[in-house]
Length: 263
Image 1 (spheres, rainbow, N blue to C red):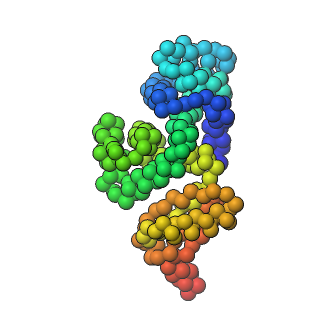
Image 2 (cartoon, rainbow, N blue to C red):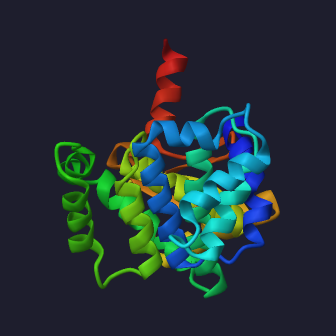
Image 3 (cartoon, helix red, strand yellow):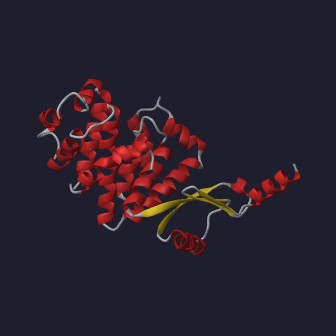
């Protein structure tokens, strides 16, 4: 885990003791949007020269009665920590909104479905340059980008998947696909899984998918979530990336080996 992610995860234990449902998560996202539009305010809430008590008191004065007690509790706990910048504090609040949605899905027995739906949506975007451009285009309003997502997903995915996809559309520093990938990483952490990124020339059927999952889980001694990417350029076989390990069994990879041997 990168040092930035380690810092952000420092609030996970405290946040996990708070019931952040879909409503509270939406409130956390609204606070994130507010702080991103108000640099002086986020600097005040992360000011290292202010005491913990003062920062938390400021958060309560601003938000008490405007957000639910669980959302306020999360924000007060986060503002009570030391952050290197206001941007990092905002990212920490965003993280707990995302994790709150994923925890809600886990408690409802729907986390695996949400993971699959997010993964499929990311694959749909990757496979359509026009769609990727439309969702990346900051000339289009956020409402317009979300309306496009609604046309694609409405009635086909869980409410939590829709909420996460809509949140991905609001990301300022990442593309939608990269943001969905981050959501999947957080989901894997909650499910105590590792993510295997699998590149194939064509989609695998259910039986081959299960055999691959079983083989990888036997190798790592734990659960594995398969994140597929279809790329005809692999010329058959597949490429699997699991952590720092890469397993190649593609025709393209074998041809590259032959070319290196001949040079």
